[in-house]
Image (cartoon, rainbow, N blue to C red; front, side, top):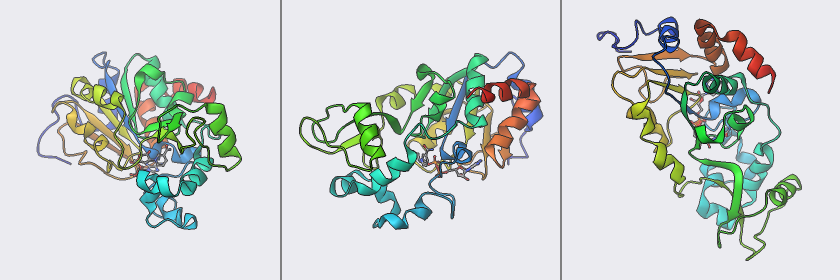
Length: 278
Ligand code: CNA
């Protein structure tokens, strides 16, 4: 942490100073950036945590390398590992975490400018965050289409196939059907490029549950203005956050971190009530 330079916007680089800023009335545009770590307590493994992460547990799928499960070239040759995984990750089986509810709380308080998520589990939506506030930077299971002719494919059909552990085929051309999640080698959705300038207008940036290793998403926190406070709520320090003048680190479990922050804002009861409804 850059100790030699005093903070410019906050009164200190602490949770309390951050909370004072949030409730000061000066904050109405918060950009939140999230990753798999906000869903691990819901029971969905992240990619990169040693031992518990998905990549550490993919051996049973006999992949040549772990990332192949999300490689479009590999998928064309062998879609089975991806569908085995989709069977485990398909939305509907998991409850949003208190961290997801915290994002919804920010929206209810009129402070959420945009949520940029790398997650494909749709738990932000299930927590009540509305579509206009969400950028699913790596797509999601919300839509699916044929990788050859591009025709969209009905949700009830893919659900049925994934449940039955079968591989769905396009009704038009018999090509492979894939949920519109972004694989390695695929372009990010247009919505990402349309919204990526927003952090420069934000008055707070909250980064939670991500290793910030996948580009171009990983660069989003660097798009904020120099004196805009950034807070990292994560198990480990990532992406150089902590080096800015107004960076605050809340290291540890993110559910604990958001509760700490909500409590300092005087919002803990609101947060627990909201979460209880999910
Ligand atoms: P990652 O690379 O696996 O990093 C996860 C980060 O979260 C790491 O820094 C962990 O230390 C941290 N973390 C894990 N659990 C917690 C916790 N309880 N509290 C605080 N921090 C925690 O995941 P990223 O999202 O950074 O990587 C980008 C990939 C992962 C995206 O393309 C996603 O699509 C993909 N992914 C998504 C899901 C999902 O939708 N839930 C699951 C697994 C992977």
